[in-house]
Image (tube, rainbow, N blue to C red; front, top):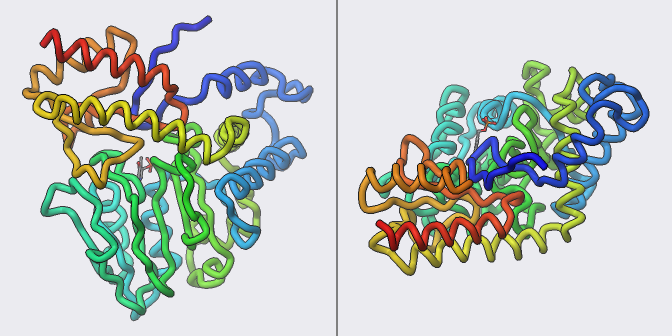
Length: 361
Ligand SMILES: *Cc1c(COP(=O)(O)O)cnc(C)c1O
């Protein structure tokens, strides 16, 4: 058995061991083809089956109807920051954005290059330590869309209450919490997520887009950036990130086999509760960086009394088989990423470590 650590990396991040084992098993000879998935044609019946199954499973798990297209594209979630305004930010309209930290800020930066942006809400003046509530978000009625970031991977905040955009199409960057909890996915006209946090490896980005929105794509958009082209061609306009889509399919099968979003939510709820309990138990030692009502279930951020202790914490955790706990360079401190594939055993071990580290230091 290979040596595996508890991997708390924020992304790319831990994958379910069961999935990695299947990948290993099928690597050299995918279902009698005599080739790996990396070596087969993306026009082959084998890949067609992988692509179809991944689309179907995502729709099923997210509870979306067939009025949504599910796409697998390249370029990371960051390309979506530009693709959304390129397709939907038409002259004379404004795009509304809520700024909840690094990734939202980057999305806004791209939209600003392509059209007019309306800042519908922000927690910047409080160092992004909270998610603006529905009453703090102001959406112009004629806006082209409203863009949110459901979970802020770097700042450690997450939406627990959603604004009602009325007739304005709602779009959401769900890169770091997609399929981690039950949610009315059908209220979003467009969802996107880089796979490398909760869905699979880096290099593939999932987009789910409602057909009524697809009809509004701007003409003249370069083909690779036009959602309609990817939808019409079932993400096979060019060579897709096929191996990544294959792993996403396996991860979706794993989520389903565990009991779908209801089960994911239950497990994730218990995981985050245990870590936040430690923060609440020792608030002068493990100092949470976000407002309790905005706490993320996926990325738990906190500081220790000083930077030397933080360095020691991260180094000793690593030596104990708990990796990837360093906070993002823009925030510092510690970040515990608790994506779907992080097991309750990993959390047990982490919480035990936190308890004994506090006692010893
Ligand atoms: C990681 C992340 C991104 C960036 O994803 P890339 O695939 O690297 O472009 C965007 N948004 C959020 C919320 C993220 O966590």
